Image (cartoon, rainbow over all chains, first blue to last red; front, side, top):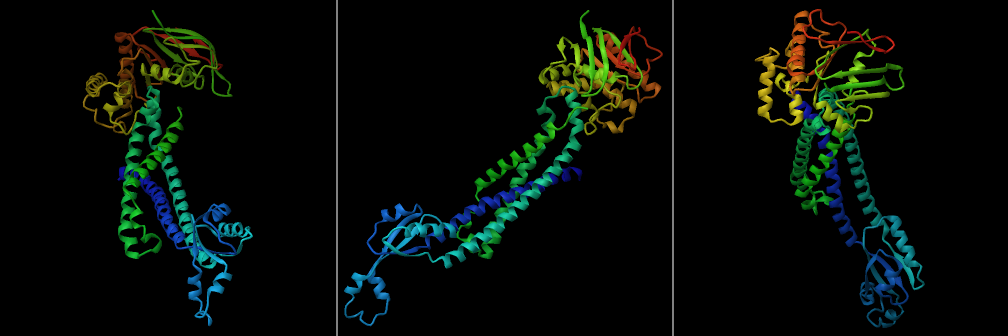
Amino acid sequence: MRFIKSHLSLIFPMVAILMGLEFFIAFDRTTKGYEESLKDSYAMLVVAKDEMSIDDFKSWDKHIYKVAEIEKSKIIDKVDLPFKSSDTSNIDKDMPNFYSIKLNKYLNNKELEEVKRNILKSDKVTRVETFDTLHNSNYGLFSSIKLAFQTFILFMTIIGFFLIIKQMEVWNFMHSERMKVMDIFGASLFLRSKALIVMAIIDAILSAIIASIVFYTIQNSWIKGNHIAILEDNIGGLFSIDDLITLSFASIIIVLIAVFLVVINVKEE
Amino acid sequence: MSNIIVAQNLTLSYERDEEIIRNASFVIEKGDFVFITGPSGSGKSTLLKSFYGNIKPQSGTLLMGGLNMSNIKKPKLQELRKHLGIIFQDYKLINEWNVERNVVLPLWIAGYSNEVQQTQAKRLLHHVKLTGKGHKYPLELSGGEQQRVGVARALSKNPFLILADEPTGNLDEYSSNVIWDLLENACQQLETTVVVVTHKIPSVFNIPYRHFTIDELGDIYEVH
């Protein structure tokens, strides 16, 4: 029982930290996909007196990556004018040019305003429509979910680290006498800490496997079943087998640092 | 006769504390059996600790097997300790290891094979009259038996020097006599140098010995 307890007291906080890390990795990966889809469906409208080229736009702001001219005839077609049928050529001639602009990434409100200001610096541009209400509501929802999630992950990680510090005190209590005796008889640092290192590495790998299984289960049952829009499109990318390696590596590094701190703090009497 | 321990004007003190041993000069040679006595707090154990590098000299010189303990580096110190046998009043056994494993700790540290360790463990346990108790744990043994395990551990790698800090301090007369016999044998038969810190020299002691005493001021005299 004591044996199981001593392992669980490291595995539990490690799983909490690794879950936090995996949530962070997976959420970052999936939200990037969601940001991409938001970006693709978003466009700004620019009204200009003269005809413009893509290079003109790109020279004004680095976030502009695609420009499409909206055909005037299509606009006229959509407008219900009484004289439309008779002659639209004069209207066509007097109309300004309309451009739909795509950006290279999903920008926040401040960055969006910056793009607008940069475009308006040109004399040729008369108006810029950012459709910021739609953009803001999407972005606001998205940002708040992301922030809430990251805060949760942060707290989970902090609690995990506190539990590991507690476990280090337990290790110190359990192993310091043995290490002191071994030191008196000339054992090297590695030999003194070997038992602790082996135990910690086994627990670290077990923690990584448990965290991966939990995540894999979340991906395949909970998210698929609940149809969460942000995650559903990228469900395949939520967890990959490479993550098990990343988690094992992170886990081993954390426990080795913890073991090292315990071992160097064991002083001879 | 080769010199095992050489002290010249040796002064020992703990950090920012008063001097515990003052200007001690002595030589301990191979095969010597040395008792160090003195009142409580006189620095007997501190002197012994300096022999295995637990405390460094504040001034003067201390040579252990030719190594200068004032500036010895950790790897050299570890190497020196592998060739020492150390016995403590509180035994300092590893309670989560069985007796056999405790006995062969110095052999395990030195990297000897399992076969060698097992053979030595059997031989040593027989020598200290603990045959058949190899699989017990230290806390299952009496104080006298635990100290015999400590002696067996100290002897396991045929050290050139045995350091014993009050080895019979917690033991009854019978157990104390067993420990003295074992140390006498080690000195007489293997020519191992033995340095024992004790309150009282045993009334019956069968081999020649040297006797150092430390007074309250930390001065050392050889009295026998």
